[in-house]
Length: 450
Image (cartoon, rainbow, N blue to C red):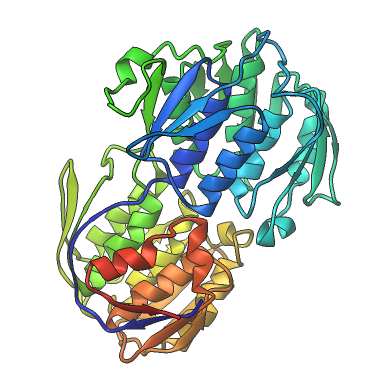
């Protein structure tokens, strides 16, 4: 699909998309919970659909409710320790291109004593998975990988023991172990982590686990002590909501947060090209990408932050102030930050480039290549990215590299470029934000698809 973006002034009020970080974790937790869980505001991205498919193959039943919510009937375990997942027979789990899905669901699937093959598509097949080769045997899990890549074949059951892991590649491996340990542990076990990155995503995991009745003690992000919990949903009364669409037999409901990762592109679009209001975001969220608010304030965007909505009150033009931002713990912000920096007069510096190599594309190189086509010079030096902005952008033909965030970054940057911009393979947005171009059109941007 090729999308054409013409220079636009945007305006209006828009609801943020559902967070795939929250949605996928909710699917995993609902899979292991006792009873039934109704998910409110479920995500519809390809990554979300992959998570729903995985939990069904692992034994959950899923029903679409009136009003759009989803009812998940979790597994009916016969015992708390090392329960089998679902029915009999080998399984193949396809994670699509979701890095979180493979890293989170692999240890969860390994709770089973059945042999399970886990694979993916696209760029996920080239991402390193050596972590499982190193850690799973220590947990009693047999594993065969494709030289440290997908597909992997595993056979549990996982035996939770005190263990030390390296958290420098991704915090998502830790998320999977925390959830799986919470289900299988019969006594307190400790995961010691060195070099942990993306700590806010672990905050999100711990918060959601607590919502589902799991108790984890966090000692300065270095030691995590997991207590036996069996996903009792002991907090369900506190978090339950009354919904006409929720069946009377449902034990609880869980509302999936709005997505700060997707909303970052909308917020930057507003800062570049208009006056918009965004609702559906939790300003108290633990999501790492909420840090986009700091960048917007640092560059001088006219932004008003309220509990129920965020307003961008006037566009920057090309007069934003260059800023310095550390994206080590929120690397998914690099693409919208580059689009924002392009409209800031001077050199913006973003730290954390080392976190970009194993995404859907090598995002540091991809951003450098595609924004150069639009007249923006990006320099990479060690762990720093330097964007020289403020000179104006030109419309160009750009390529998403099959990377959803590159497609969205180019689209946002094109809103005040000189001339039309054409984005090739723009369907990459379906991975995280399938309604992105529709939402831009709703905000009166000139967008056409072919």
